[in-house]
Length: 379
Picture 1 (tube, one colour):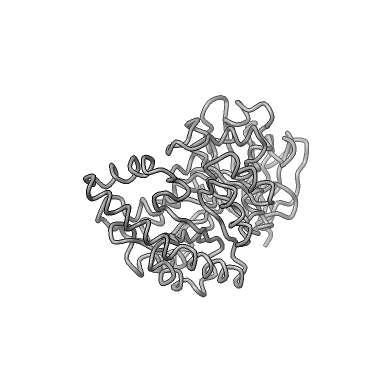
Picture 2 (cartoon, helix red, strand yellow):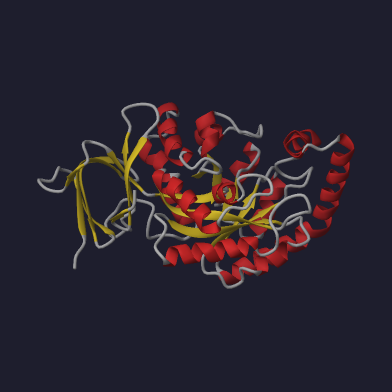
């Protein structure tokens, strides 16, 4: 039996323009785009229709599962709460970050992330979730146990993205001890002596484990055709290293030089949508809007605020002269989808997945009014 939905009187955001007209969804796919209203169907009242957003890097699930230090929530309940907020933000495809590797003071026990992935697979089998969820493994290569954690996902088909990161002091995001102290010492309430011991241990671990772990994980991803991301690249040497590992996504570069070099090397450069909404980085690094103006920013991620992924494109279209709304929307839909090989979604075109978001935006903060995933209304 054919399943059809007609959405009329809409402002349809394509990759290169906005069409005032009608969108037809049929059997889970986009069937027709017409530049005129339809006599039938649901009246969109002049609202925007955007492609479903594609989120590559969010730590939001972790916040639901571990809402307080030492607290663990029901995995299924955490997944459903996370999914509800994601879908209500217009995100129809989300890569949930699971942390691989931990030191004694942070992270999750061996097996916790594997159990979360099992709960995710069960939730999708039971049709509990509104968005489609895939897995992004965040691999802390400076730890001694990251390969053990990573090995628990050897045959998991949901793993489609892996990032190589090193948060030791003096590395990448934290190139100075002042930056590292501002983030970690205050967060963990360490004395100066405790902090000095902690830094020395982290630096020694990075020197010993980072390179062999990067080598092993990158090789495993190449064998399984999993997209590899670098993280917090700061220098041209970091970019050269990423090229050598076959990296396709440069997450959160911390300098203009690294962002430009990554973009010119054919990588998709990703920055946080909260950076756009706030007008600055929360950690004092480069402003994402500056990279947009330089033409070297490709992808936005909601990172820690799901709704920022919808909010940021409208801010860019309002404030950056060189970019319009269709171009801004591709940064949260078509470009992230293509980066990870999801060519069946991310833009509104006949034959693509009917992942659609209805948005009203008279001014200021946009409002999500409806969401369809594969032609089925989910929010």
